[in-house]
Length: 576
Image (cartoon, rainbow, N blue to C red):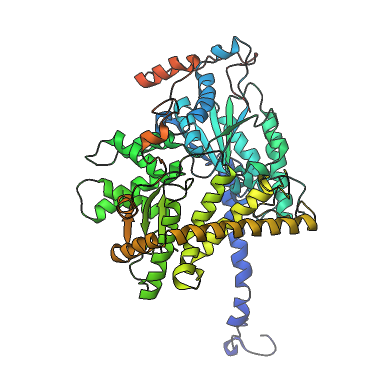
């Protein structure tokens, strides 16, 4: 009995606590965050302790993103790299040192610790580095300079340390840093947080490269097309102490590159002769451009359901790369088409009767890319220009605008790109080349696009003098072009009317309309290489590389470099 109540009369009472659903949802974000952190910490611990065997810090963010490519996976050899024989010879020394170290050690020579591949985009710097790894038969570690930088402070230096640790682990190997200018820029400029992180990454890179000694057997290669912005400490001897410039190929180099890319293509044409012909049609093209032309030709042939690739497909591919895709939807109005025809005829006729103008290959009023018409020329590979030659080029460029003035009495916006080129040429003559009497024999370094420099390297009085001289130079070229086209006004009419009828005129059509060009010109491969000393690109090797190259051609595997005792330095190893 409790509280004078009989047990049979008890009433059970149960206490319960109720929570509203709205109160429970308030805890969900916290629960999810805690669960995610626990999962990621356990995953990071697995990577660090077991499966990855590489400690990369929390969540693996600090790990290097460098890719390891085994030597048997690299399908690029030196025979696949053409058009840069001088650069190839420089790189071959690295490979030859790894394969024949005694050849150098007996003379007391040491292999350069690192090589910086420089040159314009598309010239084959990355491909040359891969060929080096493929020939040396060693692992190839590749990374881009931009992959070192992240939003977290300290990630860049950590990834540099991890990358070099990977290189030491897989030695002998080749470490390739592409676009190194992303991390190797000059220090001491801006003071933003991202820039300080880039400087810290660069400092760590310098420390790691200094840490390599003769026992590492790791070759470090890097590539950039902006060597002018690299930190001087990165380029000093002992780090990247050899600079290898990979230029755009000349006509012989382009022929060699075409031979490489034409091999897998299905064509009944003689590929050696085709390579020479295409090399003459593609001045200024890089290896990447040539590969694109060959691929475009194959695509055009497939689009036309042809069984083989013919010369017309290659010519169309060159037009596609040079001028852009043909526009068939944007049809010009009759008056606009007539203006474009006389504009292009002015270019063609002016160049035809100017001695130093480039030979004309084709003129068209079919819209391509951003242009409404274009003229294709065959400029010879020339490294020195006289004042007279530059003036002729300016007059040819002004031919379109002057033709509009003569035949329509008005001007249009179509000459904007022509005027830009003329202005650049005039300023270059006055500011850079010292070709102006009043300014004198002076050459000023002008700020490049993207440089954080807003001051000109000369006074305001000099700037005003330069502007006046440039204007007088352009006016003189315009006056000369006007007189030239007045003398050949009927020739412009003939060319323009033929363009309106056929839309495209070839060099043979121009000869039919205007007669042979009154100046000697070069238009074939044989003409361009005449007097250069050889018909093909020189691929000869020094005596010290011939035996190794012979073994490579015969498919023999050269013996690996001898291993030295662990207590002695190994001079056969390349260090960086």
